[in-house]
Image 1 (cartoon, rainbow, N blue to C red):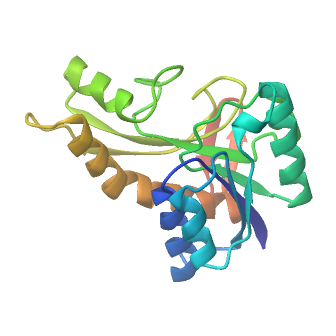
Image 2 (image 1 turned 120 degrees about the vertical axis):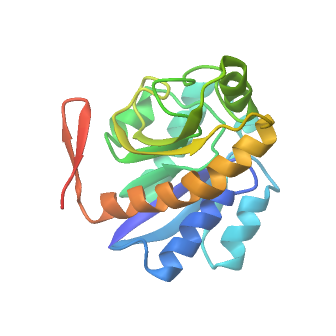
Length: 208
């Protein structure tokens, strides 16, 4: 059974999707053992508490710089014996220290089809605003490994939704979350915990 540690910064809807998936048996061979938040008082911490999951609050503002903060979070994850780290709406930048400590053991979900609409500045509603401005006809979400390159790690899973003519960024965001993010992230977590993701260079292959 692999220890899953989830990093959060906000409401925790993706965390809730993971909690529900673990309870229903969608996630196999994995258990959420810790939730770490970069902010105090966020609802994600309440979700963890309601489900008996230990939490740590590590406010970014309490640390002098990115390097100091990254070391603190990395040390915490090592203490928690994390086998898999899931970025679930974690809005704080960490440096290469954590990547070196947990190579290809961290995954993130990005609300667009990488390599489009990703990288620095593409987060939250900004992603969906850019999608609508460009006029693409499909969008979706991507689960990928976290590396030193922002949104640049190997892609694990992708899913799509149509972009409709009358969409607002908020409406599109909700469609992607409900139809893609909340389903895809638990699937990817389970695949990792079952050792079904094979990495060859920059590509992943899902073992049957």
